[in-house]
Length: 122
Image (cartoon, rainbow, N blue to C red):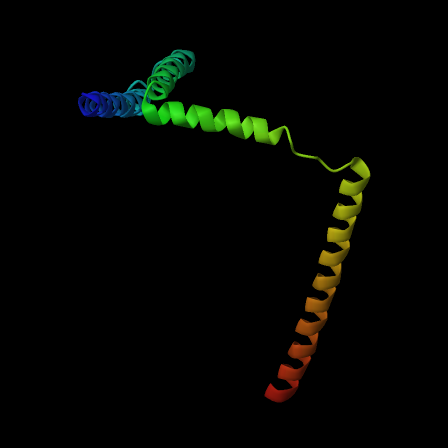
């Protein structure tokens, strides 16, 4: 009994994903086909089709799992400890100084190797 429910659910999810793909494809093709229509109308239709596609995708099993993952990610993002303004400034300054030192080193190395090669070649 449970296998037939899972099979029906899987089949229904497949049909839903097919409809989602058809809606997305029709939005893209319709936008090109009706290019002479005002932009506002095309944007409204594409927005409507996109919202319908998102809602339909959310009603699938994978859509529900994706929604749950987004909720968990938002919860985890709240735990982030952001650096202070001073820490950000100091780190940025350190990176800039390091980039300048490496650039100077590479410029000197290039100049030195050019001098050696031009001396060997003539």
